[in-house]
Length: 171
Image 1 (cartoon, one colour):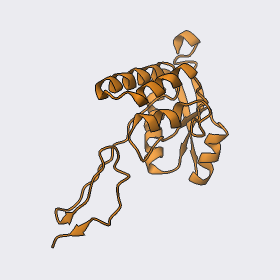
Image 2 (cartoon, helix red, strand yellow):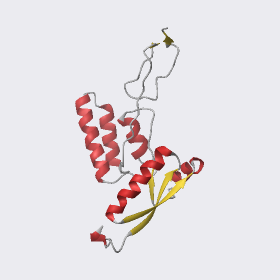
Image 3 (cartoon, one colour):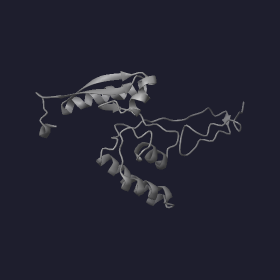
Image 4 (spheres, helix red, strand yellow):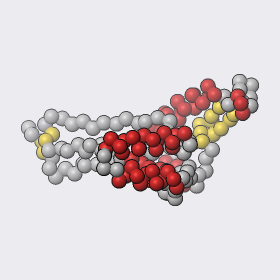
């Protein structure tokens, strides 16, 4: 920032947009605080959920903390949804055709070790290109009581697999 002319006496002021719900607002507050250490003063711009998604689709923001949640924890879903050219949820407008070829390569890689290496290389390059910087990772979990039987927890998501036709209480 100092090479760009910013410092303690010349701070950059930006509006930091975030959805006005705790899961988005709280990290935005923390990000705002951390930006101060590099001479950026953020003004928190809290947006109601009904207005948030249209704002993102219009790319009507300077800086935004957007959550990129998904129901499937798989690189295919994340890469194609958030970084592929022309994807509706690629709100930054990032487009790199060579990167999309890497998305395809990792998608068809049968060796899980090789696929993991490709995924990490893709992620590293996306971060280096600031395609959509990752500020934090949200953690969630699923738990149940011992009397719940027949519940299958999916290996790639906590959000799917909740069909209850095979679940029963053993009491």
